Length: 86
Image 1 (tube, rainbow, N blue to C red):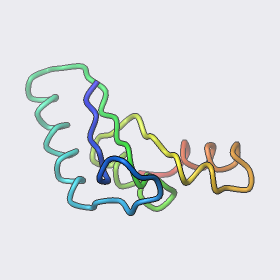
Image 2 (tube, helix red, strand yellow):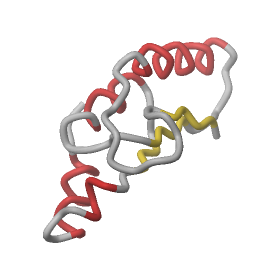
Image 3 (tube, helix red, strand yellow):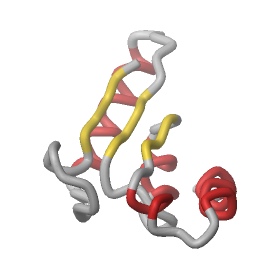
Image 4 (cartoon, rainbow, N blue to C red):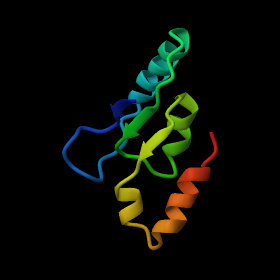
C-alpha cells in the first residue's frame, strides 16, 4: 500500500490539496507499468466533492475524517462516499 497525504499532516478539517491529484495519477501509472498490485490510499480533505476525483486518478482507499465526524448520520455519509461516482 502507498499512502499519499492530500493535506499537510497534523490537523483535521483542512482543504484538499488539488495538486496531489497529479501525484495519485503518476503513482497509478507507475504501478500499472511495473505490474505491481498495490493499493493507493489517500488521506486528507476527503469528502463528497473530492472523493470522485481521487478515485478517478486511481486511489482505492480513502481516509475521510472530518467529513464523517461532522455528518448528522455517519452511515449515510460513509455510504455516499463509497458510491460516489468516478
